[in-house]
Image 1 (tube, rainbow, N blue to C red):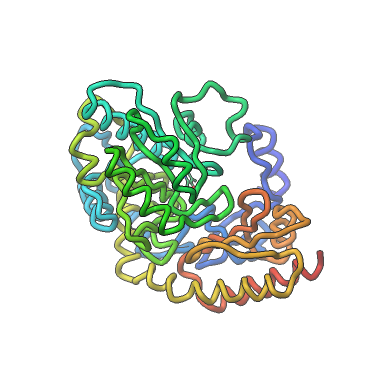
Image 2: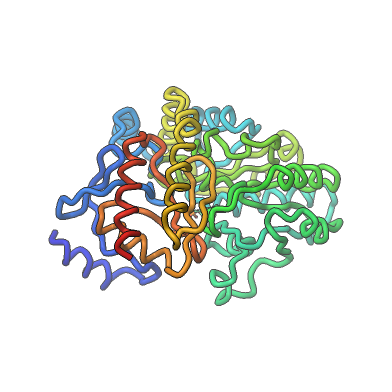
Length: 398
Ligand SMILES: *Cc1c(COP(=O)(O)O)cnc(C)c1O
């Protein structure tokens, strides 16, 4: 199809909830994407942190091809081998005791909230639990997930949302303490805030939340949908800290492009939890997506991918430091591993992202003033250099 036709047919038929960039993507190879006219782009976005192995990893695509030919779907009424392998792989990688597979990140959050409510219900013998969430958080677009998302512009048209959610300030333990009462069933936070502007949790904050959860007998839910799966130099971001959550959510890079998320529950969380009849999904964890999950965990383990991120991330940070040093409009960088944000002033970050596309590099935005980078985890030093050269060209031309 002609490029213009593709854009027009999309615009004429899809609900317009995205302002798309002027780019029609056709295929990918390694860490590069190609548009419909054959132009090559260095990918520093990974489809919002999904395509962690880049494009065309043969072991991954072969596993999917084989499973497509074999069996796509069974429903959750029956056992299947890919489901068993994926559940074991996720529990081993995360240290969680049990896992439930979902079709998206938002659904993982929904399930996590329900698990926390059920924990409270079974322990306290009543309903009416409240949840504490963070300002500037992002947990997804479904009503439950939106209810714990602390960014007003996502929420304002949709009130009333789920009841009894209280918002604390991220990285401010006292603000959390002030909201806890005997009906608190969970605190939910991203370990490293993504959409809100790339803010890592401080160790004091996470350790403090862990302590509060233990003292007050509520669950600590860490949302690692964006920051998990190797992106911060460990399989899970919380593994960089001395903290283990009661529930961890995952999605995005969990399946590397097939729609799959999950929530994992700790030993403590599964003592009082969802039972047959409480929760379910028709597609969730089907043979295709769970093949993607166990294959991706397997490849990441075999290739020591989190370690690669850990080794190379300081170089990316050094290059971002150099940019901050050389350009007035770049004021700081924040992040961990290959989840980095360049803070800019006097310009909307989306203008930089648009200009970068013209130079052949794909970037993202976050918050109101951050250019976000979520490259495939398999990038090498030369790709960081290429990104820097292109980004400097963009900044030079502003
Ligand atoms: C993307 C994201 C979600 C929502 O995931 P979807 O698959 O879009 O529903 C939730 N939490 C965080 C931290 C995310 O980055």
